[in-house]
Image 1 (cartoon, rainbow, N blue to C red):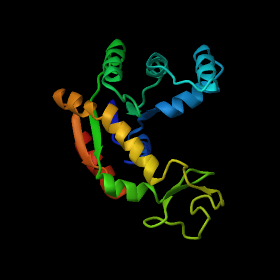
Image 2 (cartoon, rainbow, N blue to C red):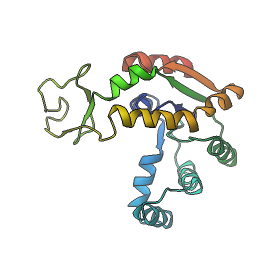
Image 3 (cartoon, one colour):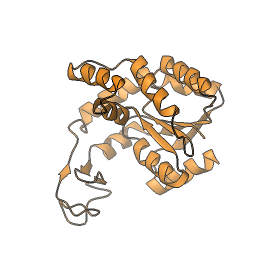
Image 4 (cartoon, rainbow, N blue to C red):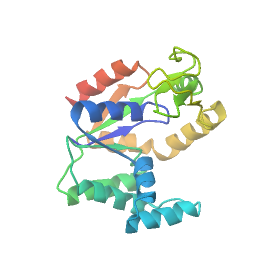
Amino acid sequence: MNIILLGPPGAGKGTQARRLVDERNMIQLSTGDMLREAHTSGTEMGKVVAEIMGAGKLVTDEIVIGLIDEKLRGENGGGFIFDGFPRTLAQADSLAELLEKHGQTLDAVVEMRVDDEALVARITGRFTCGNCGEVYHKVTKPSKVEGTCDVCGQQQMKFRTDDNEESLRTRLMEYYKKTSPLIGYYYAKALLKPVNGLGEIEEVAAEISTVLG
């Protein structure tokens, strides 16, 4: 099964993708992770990515598609989760062509719906452990001992610099302008599966499991 996780920044796509990896043996293809991996890989594609990122330029759609192409050639486990891609209609068309090239299909697009105001409240209180990546929230999920990770015991808590209200609203506007047209695109293809992205992690996971079958 190949799926896309679609939703605004902070909707919890990464958290739910990790659960699907663990529970269904799926492979998460996160654009950011692939670029970081390529940057240090030493491959020809990696050298191109490193040069572009080193110059502070944006990586082109062609390069991202090339990275995904490489992943699709390998082991697919229980299928692929596309996280952070596609972001535009042009990218969606490119992904469809790439899957067809590999004899694969897209089975579902899980749209994690959120309320903007609730999302702002949730994200502006979020922080993570710099050592193991465990996610916390100063109101809804504080660590048991302030400043210390419950999971690994390290004291490396950090807030993302862009997890503030002004930055988040800018990112939301960018999402709605560029990515929200994908909702109609995939609805027309009968692939869209909306879920409540603001529920508790377990609740969202259960809803995703239901829509995927």
